[in-house]
Image 1 (cartoon, one colour):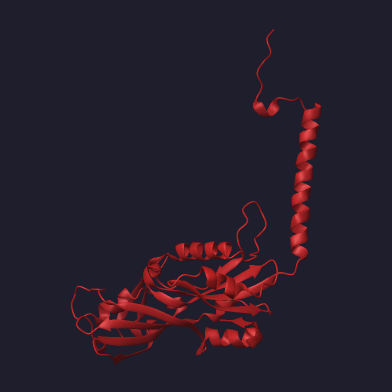
Image 2 (cartoon, rainbow, N blue to C red):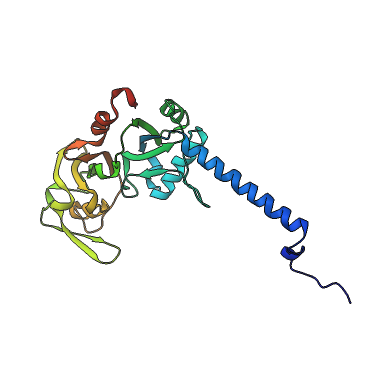
Length: 266
C-alpha cells in the first residue's frame, strides 16, 4: 500500500518530536513577546500635545491623509512613539476634530504618547517639516487631560474678492443644512457662524467668525449666502483657521498655562 499524502500542517503525528519541538518554540516566542510588552509598560510613558500648520495644496488633504503625513514625519524624525498592544498595534495618537477639507489651518492639534521623555521633539520635527505642513508648538503634559474637550470652536478667517461676494448679504436667520449620518440637520446662520463680522481691504473682504465643533459645515455654505450670483465661484477665495477656542480663550493660551512655560517648545 502506498503512503497517503497528508495536509502540510499534519506532516508529523502528534506524538512526534518535531511536533513537540514546534510547540515549545512557539511557547518561548510568545513568552518573549509578553516579557517585552511588560518591560515597555514598566517604562514611564510621556504625553505631549503637538500643534501643526497645514496650508498650500496640502490643505486639500483629507483628515486620514493628513494624519498619515504627520505619522510619517514622526517616524522620519525618530520620535519614540508608543504603540497599542494586540495583533494590530497602532500609534497612540489622538487628533482634534478635523476642519473641512480645503481649509488652511494653524489649529491642527494632536496628543502623542511616547515611550520615554524627549525634550527634542520640536527640533526633530522642525528638521523634517515642510512649508505647507510645519510643526508650530509642542507642550509636555504632566496631568491627564482630554484635550479634545478643549476644542469647543474654531476661529475662521475668509478672504473674499469684492467682485464676487458681499458680506452685507449675511442674514442671521438664513438656514444652513448639514447632512448627518442619519438625518439632515438645519441650523440658523447665526448658530453656525457665531460673531460674524467683516472688514474691507483694497480688493477683498476679510470675514471672521467662530464655528462650534458640533456645527461644523463646509465654508461653501457661507459662500453661497454671500455670493453676488447664483453660481458660486471659489476663485481667489482663501479660508484659514487661526486656532481652536474654549470658553473664549485660544487653545494655545490654555495649553501654555497647563503645560507651563518650561514645557513649551515653539
